[in-house]
Length: 270
Image (cartoon, rainbow, N blue to C red; front, side, top):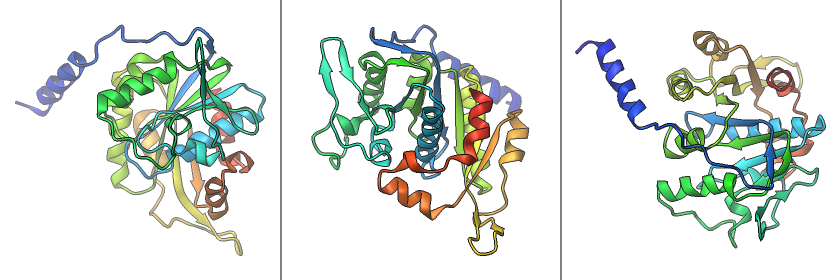
């Protein structure tokens, strides 16, 4: 069997496992104009940080903004925004919590009693919980909902792509050469699901010396433009290694970070 025949067989097998008509209806008290997923092919590249920054930019521009923390086993969005209150339910569904500046948020950490308790669930249960974040949460009137997706191309990303009206995704990566292959998997998955790639963000792209201003590419030469060009993706952004920004996220002050590195991308996709 040739390489082309092998690829055709894999594509056909993938299509058999991606049935149409799986989209779920949102809650009756939800009116969401645009849904943007933030995805990475692997963990540890700063996907949640990018989600937080994009949501903060959106909110500062006066858009009604929400974040769905779909990384059930590794939820970090509430901590980034200093949110510790719990969500509660009304007859129509679950009300999301809000950050200090009014960003609506839903995460497993605002539903469990103890934030430190691990979520020891199998894949189908996790996927079902994420679906409920769409069907059971009363998001209200939102201009944009950002979904912080779990890393990889497994069950939960597939569930999100199938069951929610995703307008596009932002792929987060880092400079290492190995990441190009991992990004390719995420981009190819989105392509097979007919989900547009809105942009690629390269996190930890460089460190700018505070004394001389010189940029040092600690994790290797940037590959974001080459990867974007290979896939025909127009929007790219490079985020520096910024200890101050990391400290602010750790202290729940994500909304106070200057998100200038992502402003151009936000304007392009919105």
